Length: 68
Image 1 (cartoon, rainbow, N blue to C red):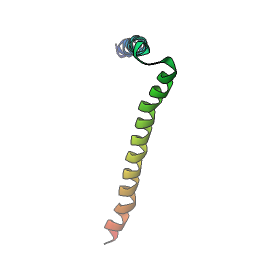
Image 2: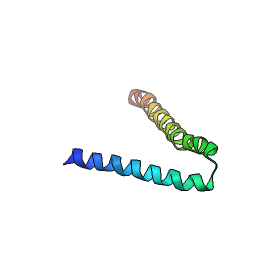
Image 3: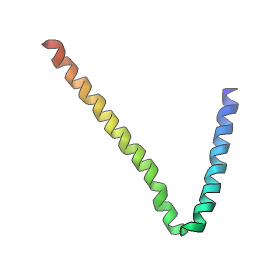
Image 4: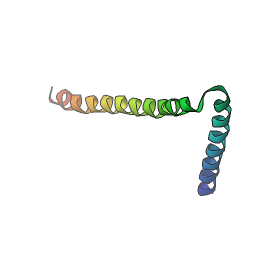
């Protein structure tokens, strides 16, 4: 059941990506689509780095609290 739902979600993503790409191609020159496609992964990667640094700070601060 889960594999079927996963496959359906993948196919839905492909279909929506193609549809949205076709719509945006009418509004934006195809040259700019690549640049706009870089923004979401860059944003997600940046938020992952910020989140990882926050966890690292907590891990460093815990031993100092334990020794007091």
